[in-house]
Amino acid sequence: MRMKKLEISNEGLLKVDIMELPENCVIVVSKGQAKVSELPEHAETKIITHQGKVKRLRWDEGEEF
Image (cartoon, rainbow, N blue to C red; front, top):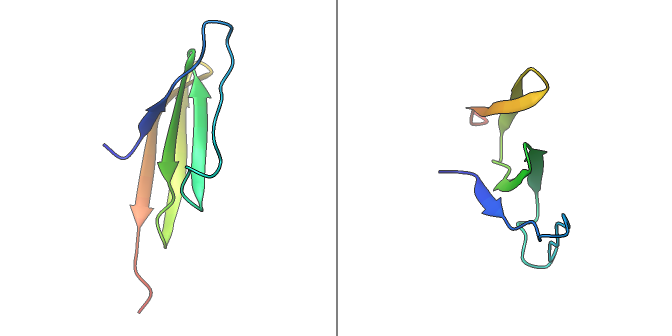
C-alpha cells in the first residue's frame, strides 16, 4: 500500500516529525484516521470523497518523454 497510517493520540493530537516525512508528501485526515503518502515525480493525485468522507486516493502516474 502506498498510504502509511499515522498515529493520533487519545487526546486527538496528530504529532508528525517533519524530518521523518518524505520531502514531498500529502497527509489526509478522515473518519478519525490520518495517513501519509509520498508524492510521485509526475502524477495527478485525486482524493475521492463520499458523503464528506475520504473514500479513496487515486494516482494517475506518467513519465516525461
